[in-house]
Amino acid sequence: MPPPQAAGRSPADAPYDALETREPAQRERDLLAALPALVRRVQATPTGAERIGRVDAAAITTRQAFARLPVLHKSELLERQRSQRAAAAWDPLGGCSSIGWRGMLAAQGARRVFQSPGPIYEPEGRGSDTFRMARALWAAGFRAGDLVHCSFSYHLTPAGAMMESGAHAIGCTTFAGGIGNTELQLQAIADLRPHGYIGTPSFLKILVEKAAETHVSIASLHKALVSAEAFPPSLRDWLRERGIEGYQAYATADVGLIAYETSAREGLVVDEGVLLEIVRPGTGDPVPDGEVGEVVISVLDTEYPLLRFGTGDLSAILPGACPSGRTAQRIKGWMGRADQTAKVRGMFVHPSQVADIARRHAEIVRARVIVEGEMASDRLTFKAEVSTRPEGLADAIAASVRDVTKLRADVELAAPGSLPNDGKVIEDARSYK
Image 1: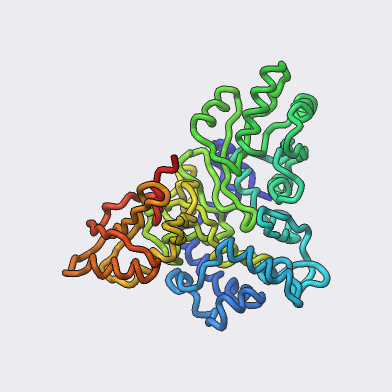
Image 2: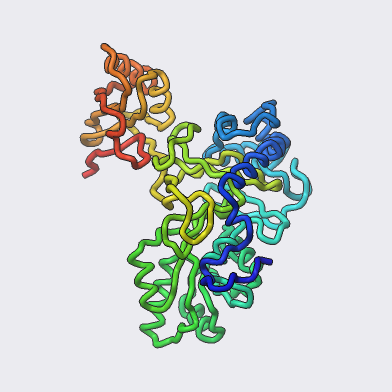
């Protein structure tokens, strides 16, 4: 159970546990110390044994060494699950999980299994809060004894159970509202008078508007944790004007909680149960703090030990610690998708190809492909930030573009720092009229 609230601090500022206020250097030492065991656990799964092979787990004790391990993207996880479901050695979780049920390669032990679009299947472990959502709920002001109205789905996808397990870990009681049935959910809120709401921000707005229209009292709702959608400041302020203080959580069905908002409202604080990296899209190479890239997560979980899982989301690390007193890394929040594949003159161009071209030329600091014109009349430009400009560099890069993508492109050389810091490596600026 979390510690009691510290005297003189607001509920939203109180830490959930001592992990949140560790010295950053101590947290980093703890994260690095956990890596060898995580690598060994992943190697014990069929997919992990194939992906990272016989690497010496004991030697993975730095972020640099860890960054040399391959990234597992959602598309690859999907394909592995599909192939394993069709294989003689049947494993519908794709050989990535240490838990499962009778008849699988993995040992028994999963509490539930969920389905996400794809379909991709995710197991839930036997722990009390395996998705680690309690930390985000605590930061949003939820406390033991609260009644929480949860409007995430309880069917197929894990969102409802994910949030509910976090609420139960704090000591809250939950009402399983699920999705839809606006009138019935409003009646439940009026009858039960819950203290807080969990769900999408858009459905919360619908509930508030419908309550005003039908003169149903939802005055008991004073706090909310929202996720799965963008939560713009305009909507946050709109809810605040109506007495509801909303916070956002960034989580995925695969890895659970990644980061969460605090009362400081300055980015999202990274969860204590994961190691977060921001990498250049199409690669596994970490980018400098502040640069936008793909969010890659390693879950320090022994039951579903995802290692360097590429979420496909873009974000960037913020400098400094959170004013709320939490000392973990902070990220800006969700900033778009990293999957920027474009089809040009009948050929697909992938972020990994842009990275391959850049690796061929030591002078390239950063690069992006810009596609312009109209469909069927595309113009391709390879724009590269370069440290030096030896004679013939542009022609050499153009030759690499042809070799890798089978397409011709104009090459523009630019000074370091001149490309936008938006995480894009492929910019599709074509007209689709």
